[in-house]
Length: 246
Image: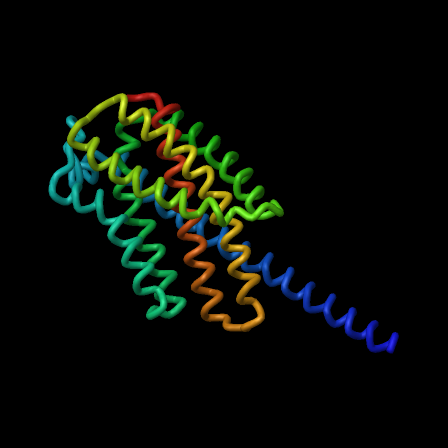
């Protein structure tokens, strides 16, 4: 009986070790995909934002007003992210990853205006601060024993409210409303960074036993997209506070 208990304990320990190793590999893949997406976004944004000829395809270089293509590019990331969630289960892992990279490139086009509106130094400083804050919040979400799932609905409702307020402010152009949106945006996406990290971890642990590599691979891509969006939005809202205008 003692030998049976020993064997059982050793087997359970081995399974736990395999799951822990798989979780680390899964999270590394999530952060790796996210990092490639960030590099792609930054590269496209820099290329268009620092070239007057390319930038003029999207906006007036002097007034910064978007043309028809600029308006399309502005709203394309929002449309694409909803489409991605709707078709993910019908895509192969390779197609899902390609879609994510295409999304990151379009986001770069959408954000290219910041290289015209803000100084390069302030963009770099804000990016560094965002990276430090994001890493700290994501580490908290990964290691905390506190269940953050209860905050999910509240945070998602906050994102919807932010989107509505941002669209309204396109027409109102209220500086007070813009400031309030930035403050609330930083708080919401700080919370989402921790929440999404924990959710990605828990999703893997709940499905690791299935051994479905294709499903887990697409889950990693979706997780990368979630954290990518958290980082981008946290960066953009912080830039409103810290960015020095050209």
